[in-house]
Length: 227
Image (cartoon, rainbow, N blue to C red):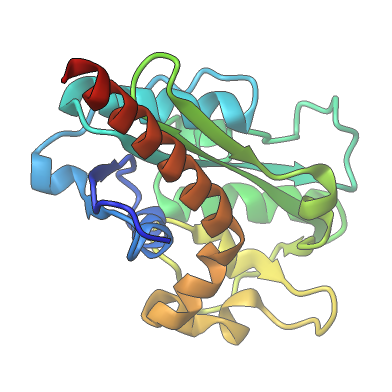
């Protein structure tokens, strides 16, 4: 795919999500971090779904920078608890404790106790959504289907492994269903290995390529009209 390497702001203050977005955009655009632009907008993640919140994040960064913004949002579904249960974190994975100011260790404590109340482990799955936002009417979304989520289900347990993944603390409580090993023990390299991050970003690359092509086509058509 050949596209002009546009500047796109990576719409997150989470260090792990930032590295994943950088891997996702690699070779397609010039990713600009919030720290490089000296911005950190206050994002009210009030959406009912991960798609809603992905749009809210991207729009907030676009509004304060004027650059197209790429965001990601995740929701956690506990498969052994009714979906209507107040214990379902959904889009409130971190905010369920103390809002955006919740620390990684506070999250670990909360979810360890939750798993302990349900016998020591819960089946869980993440649902991810990504958004490219370039102004009103220029919104491209990709949200994982329930079938995609189920393929990556894991156990959320009440005892953490020793390894930590800054920004994604629940990786220390995630146990693979097929091997019974901690995710972090099998994938500790995710913290430093760019190849592993590229693998994690791979499912979203076709969507991002198509979205950026659509944006480039719009920009080209507008340029032709002006001349």
